[in-house]
Length: 128
Image (cartoon, rainbow, N blue to C red; front, side, top):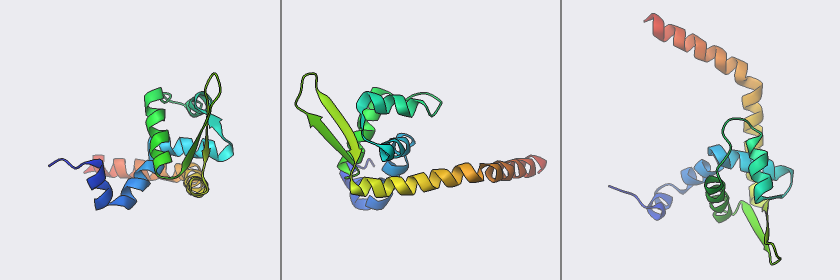
């Protein structure tokens, strides 16, 4: 049985928003926009600085549209030539970004303990 987006929202809207906010690119977009508004290309470059593969244009567009739909991101298209579009956080988005930033800070502070726990787990599993 296939579930449409609308059906998924109706079944568990909280989980869906949480997935948007904590997705690979959603986290980085929120953290970057917490600092200041960005144009699309600026945001893409800023996210690329986090290491690993950079975000594709398509994926960044989808992420921004999803966060905009959820009321977290504001898209401001200026009617100029060439077109200028700025992305910023709404009040709701700022609140979510603060929470995400706190979680990422915790991850950085506790990574040594997580790695130690992983090693202990792996050693115990390989011993049995």
